[in-house]
Image 1 (cartoon, rainbow, N blue to C red):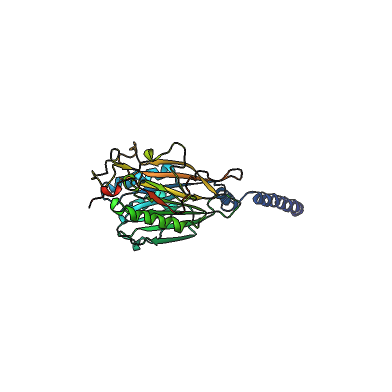
Image 2: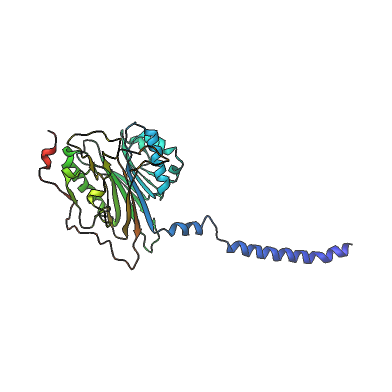
Length: 329
């Protein structure tokens, strides 16, 4: 009996060694899911999607409105969000929603902010960020900027910069609004790929046409079929949250804008969101509508963004005649 067991042991050991060798080879051939495959998935990106929204600081139906806003975020799954008129209350309601956790918040410390403020949320880690207070701003308006490194697949170390602001409102501050936009574009013009978006409060009756420096585009107007007359994000006839205003506020206008300076990207698509009630949401998210924008990396065979028709070195407002007479004294 002992001789039989001894004769089997070399075969058993050999079998175990063979199984171990093939098992180890199989292990080496399977990619590590937390490593190279995850990196490849991130590197395969060719687009960046962005949503900007003035989410309204008012307490009116705030909880229902933030739920409606969350439904839009869940549906669109934007890579970047920029919100204006954020308060500690409406931000707390957004934090409770499950989608919020996947975004990085800029600025990260809101305790230093005032009654209402602006934020940037991005699925990409932020490499650098800064807050720039505007000069001579009665309401302490600011420009927030976040730099993102390599958000898409590219042979170059492509950096994308997102910025948001909320400019002064009404005709009374029309000139100051122009100064602050000029200040913003000067600060951002050193970047190759940058979009600044938010509630610019640009009213046609006071500001007229915004003439941008030749490197910049109004993303909405850069796409075929879009005009100043079909891009309204403020519409008293469609939004029940808008109160009746006097002559100093437009009944409808394109208050919210997306301005871009792009070297390695182009504007692919853009649409107005949050302008319709749905079965899932019986209220609109805000007194403003939002803007959803997608930019895509330029292929090597493509030319640069060819929608630049401006020749100005600085942004300026081509105001309509008699605009100053509309301002209440």
